Image 1 (cartoon, rainbow, N blue to C red):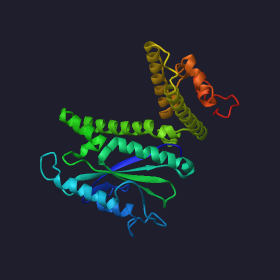
Image 2: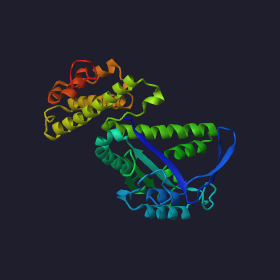
Image 3: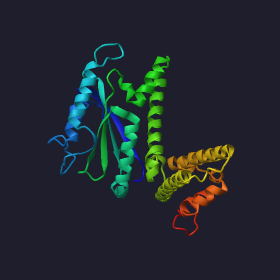
Image 4: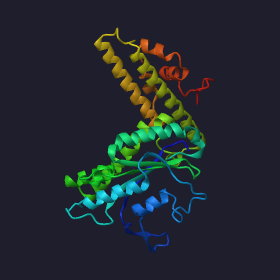
Length: 322
């Protein structure tokens, strides 16, 4: 698996009862986990993690511990009001919990990916991000993160989907349109994580099963995503180094603006290729051509040079071909 996995769920102080239809047609009543159940599972309390063969304590990567985070959630819930201005019910949502994972076969990328993901969460949620922890007792490396709204905010402040749905409702849109806005916002959340984090580590936005790719097609796309990730990192490093060294100082403002526009266009095309490499057409490859002076900076790296030449991913006997 060389594609991103990030998922969020919302929880309350008391798990609500939900009715679930079984394949047999019967209705089964289940109880959703509460924030206390989440804390027990995270801390590997006996009886709360039956799926783990040899439970180990979590490793705190950022923020406070899990129990302290649940106290923050309780504090927020105690002062929160529902849409009608009433005191929030016990089964009212007060905690956003997420998981970010990578397959065991990509373990060599985990440390760098983990650091990038934590920075992304800190930038996205600010002080609302209370805790990030890692579990090291399961096959696939993964971390959990927990987010609580600031006092005085609504729960939509930490949940993009709910925020989009509430905005639609305030405009008088019907329930169907509200659900559509919810799904669009959650897809945008996945897209943003792909662009800001996963793409930089060679992970595609969507896995092969969802798009019904053959094994060879999926392998080709994985290789391409990893190559583009390397090209993107090198491109950023080289252009930043060139600017720091003052290599652009002799250019006119108009020429500098042209270079900035070309760089922005190139970055957009690279980001598109990382989200969905199939969409990157040959005509778009040629549009990434940079000015002669910038081409000189790329000569030191055959990967970036191949990208600029429009030959990246073509069979040429190169170690960097697909």
